[in-house]
Image (cartoon, rainbow, N blue to C red; front, side):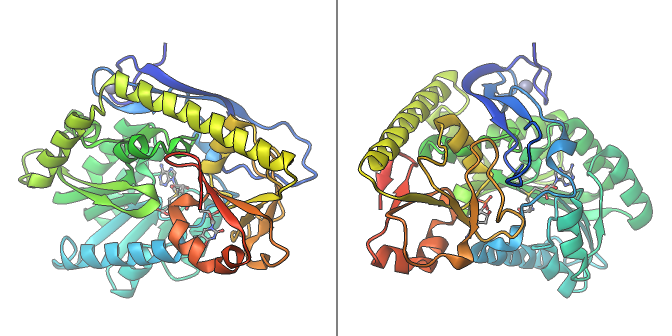
Length: 405
Ligand code: SAM
Ligand code: TMP
Ligand code: ZN
C-alpha cells in the first residue's frame, strides 16, 4: 500500500496511464539499451487532499548531467521570471544585505536579474549541465539537491535567507518533509517560501492531462498546499494565479502566525470548494474526459493518415511523453517533432520514439498538420510560425478537447 508523501494517509487512485517512460529521457537513434518504464497513476489523499503520483521515480534518474530542459527557451518565460525577480527585489529583498535561495534554478533564468541587482543569491540545482549555463553568466550555484542536509550547510555558510523561491520544482519533489526541514533551518524568522507550480484547478478545467508525468509528482491546490504547510509549521499567506505554463498558482508561505493571510487565500479556497477539487468524483470525471480526448485524438490522427495527410508535431515537451505513450502515437501517425532545444534535437522522444528535428530549420514543404505539444507556449509559437498557417497548414490542439486551429 503506498502512503501519502505528505501525511502518511492512503491515496485513492483515480487515473492510470499505464507504463510510461521518463519524460525527459530523449534517446540517441542508435541507442539499443532498455528504456526505463514505471506505472504512471495518480491518487487523491483523503486525509490531506494532496493529489500525487502512485509511484515515485528515483530522483537521480530524472535530474542529472544530461537533464535537457532549459528554462530560457521561451521568451515569455524569460519575461515572466524577470518580472518575478523585480517584484521580489522591490518587496521581500529590499532590506539591508538580503539573501535569496532558489531551488531548481536551472539555467539562471530568474537569478540573472537578482545577480544584476547585486543581491546575494544562491541557486541550488542538481542537474549539472543546466547549472553550468547559469554559472557561465556569473550566477552562484550549488550543484546539489535541496533537502534538509544541503540547506543546513547553506545556512552555516551564508546565513539566513529572506526568500526561498522555487518555480516548477516543488511539484517535482516527493520528499517534502526534508524540504520543509531545510526551509525551516535556512529561512529568516520573517522570511517567505514562495513557489509556483501547475495548478490542479486548471488541469481539471482544461483536461490538460499531459501535466501528469514522472517529474510532476504533485498536482497542488491551495487547500493541499495549506494542509502541507500547516503540517510542517508554516502557513499559506498568499496565492496568486499565473497565466504561464497552462495555468499555475504562486504560493507564499511564512512561519505559522508570522503574517496575516491575504483575502486571496480564502477566495481561492472557496473557489476550490465550489469546483469540488478535493472530491474524488470530480477527479473521476476528469479521468473520463481524458479518456475521451485520447479516443478523439487517435481517431483524428488515424483518419488523417488514411487520407494521406502529413502530420508532424511542435514542442518535444516532457508533457508530450504522456500524450504519445498513453495514446500510442508512433512515427506512422506523427512523423517528427520540431523543437528548439539543442539537447533534444537529433534524438528520439521517450517511449514513442518520434524523431526530434530543429524547429529553427522548419521551412517549406510544410506538413499539412502540426500537433501542438507545447500548447502552453501557443501564442509565442503560433506567432513565430505564421508562415506555416499562411501556407494552409493547420494546428491540432487537444486541450480541453481535440480541435483544429
Ligand atoms: N525553475 C526553472 C523553471 O521554472 O523553468 C526550472 C524548472 S525544471 C522543470 C525543474 C528543475 O528542478 C530542474 O532543473 C531540476 O534539476 C531541479 N530539481 C529537481 N529536484 C531538485 C531539488 N531537490 N533541489 C533543487 N533542484 C531540484
Ligand atoms: P515546456 O512546455 O516544458 O516549457 O517545454 C517547451 C518545449 O518546447 C521545449 O522543449 C522548447 C520547445 N519550444 C520550441 O520548440 N519553440 C518555442 O518557441 C518554444 C517557446 C518552446
Ligand atoms: Zn495526505
